[in-house]
Image: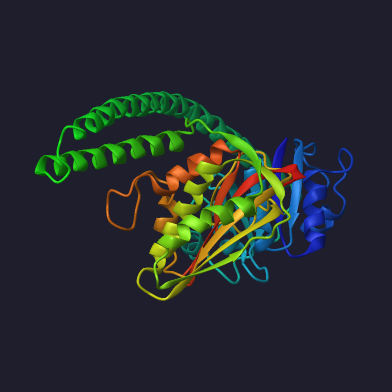
Length: 405
């Protein structure tokens, strides 16, 4: 069934759309006919099946599109009124396309307050459609039918490409995983032989220093292989039912000694949380990585890093960047790390989970990509829910286990 989103601040107009696109009985046009000035003679009187959702403003529309995307039930078409309080129609289309660029958007306007070129300038795309007021139900049905068909075609083509790309990625993942495993095995042999060799070399000799440098490099190589497996979701996890606040407190007892002196650490770790199935070692990597990013964002300025745990139901609204399973439901126990550093612009936000991407110096490992892989192996989600000149907030959620820990 095709899904259509109606965005209009007038409840009567939204109801009219509903009666036009999903009439209560064959041939009945109801209020829509009166509002949009059409006769009953309509060759497209029996429309296809549509599921209609309504939004009274742009903010609500953005929330519904997020929810639809997260739940794997995207909208095909949106009819958006141009004149609305808050976000106008063009701004709403721009926000919708940030979330789902494949939606077909129809701006409903009288062209009295804004011209098409101005709308294109706001939206940033030219593939937008217009309905001029006043219009009739047949126009709405024709737009809905044609654009839903085009959306279906585009989606089928994209899915076919994704299948092809998915097969390529699966092959690359298998190859990368095999390389990482072999690398770890080879480095274990190198490390073992280096350790044996150090027993025969005097401790303060030049040769011993060379051996120590070689062992340090070998350990770093092993850590990189470890991170690569975590990113690919192929690292073996030893999960137990844990209390996230207790795990966070234990990890912080070690990590806090690495916090720079110009950074204050604040925590809010409520004790009575639902349990989560967690690999403690992997969780320490998550917390350490998020906190390192946080205090590096503060740089040499005075600043604060706040670490919080809690429980929530997943809300698809308000996320600027997120990696999450397709079907999210139930309660999630979360870890949240907030800093008051430099924040992230759109370019950084779009690449934050890319392997080896860093705004600092090179050679930083897999960074947030590793954290993303660990979170995915725990059936969790990670997202940025705020980023500005005043800092960044990242939140990681893990499925709650009903038994309290």
